[in-house]
Image 1: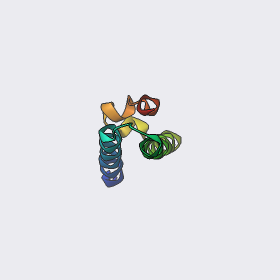
Image 2: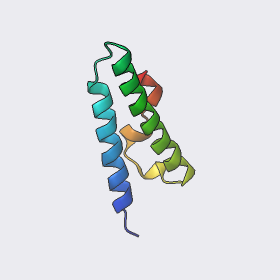
Image 3: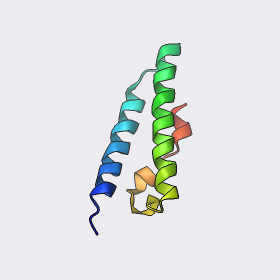
Image 4: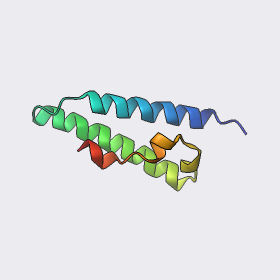
Amino acid sequence: MNNTYIYYLNDTLKQLISLAKDVENTDEYYQGVIYGYYASISILLNQAEGFGIIEDLDEDIKDFVPESLL
């Protein structure tokens, strides 16, 4: 089986998490930006779990708690 989708999902989630952590929570606009990242990351992790591929992701991705961004 081709695991390209796992590599894609891992890289995408790592980039989104990194970008979210780089946002400085200084005002309502940036809080909205962080919430957008939070929502996107949460959806991707929930879908990975729903499709049964969460265990194929890197440990730091599997253990990431999206609520830590808020």
